[in-house]
Structure formats: C-alpha cells, structure tokens
Length: 114
Picture 1 (cartoon, helix red, strand yellow):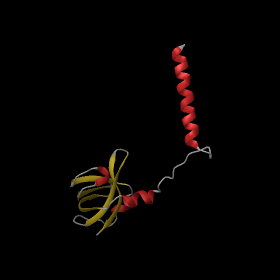
Picture 2: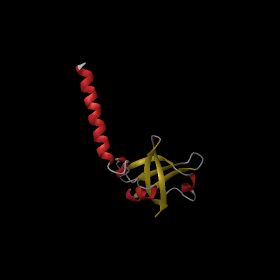
Picture 3: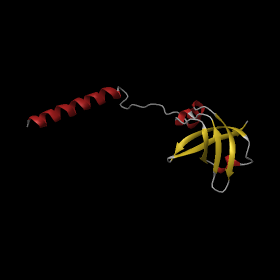
Picture 4: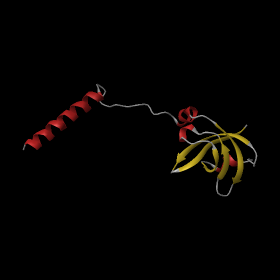
C-alpha cells in the first residue's frame, strides 16, 4: 500500500510540473528551424572530385574536415541527395559541399563548383 501511495504522489507531482510548463496557453511549442536555416548553419566543406558515378548517384571526394559529422579530412565516397547535383561534374573539379547523415549514410545535400 505504501508503494501505491508513493506512486500516486509521484504521478500527481509530474502532472503538476507538466501543467506548470504548459503555462496559460495550454500548449508548449518551440519553433523548428527550417531546412534552409539548418543548412545555412552548416559550413561548406572544400573538396576535390575523385570519381563520379551517375548511375549509382555517388561521388568520391577528397575533402577537408566535416564538422557537423565530426569527420576529419579524407578521401571517401558519398551518396548524393539528388542525382542532379552530379550534372556536369568531372574528376578534378574543385567543389564546396555540405553533407549529412541520411539513413545511416554520409550524403551530400549541397554541391557547387568553386
């Protein structure tokens, strides 16, 4: 019985905290950054194209540090979010790009020639 009383007291306390957090409006909302705002916050990383595979939608880049992925500079393959990012790209092109982890894969979401 003592356990039930303690559990009931904890639930009432939690309900009181939630009601207080909601304030007078009854709901709590936090603005979500737009995708463009989130992309703008990520730095562009410099790189060099080493290979382009249009059929698979992949590009191999020699790149500098990618801070948002906590990744040091290296040469590696990336998926691309949209195959059109690869249009006109060729080995040796100097690029700036952003990459994110999408479905567990490092994916280029923005890519432009320098």
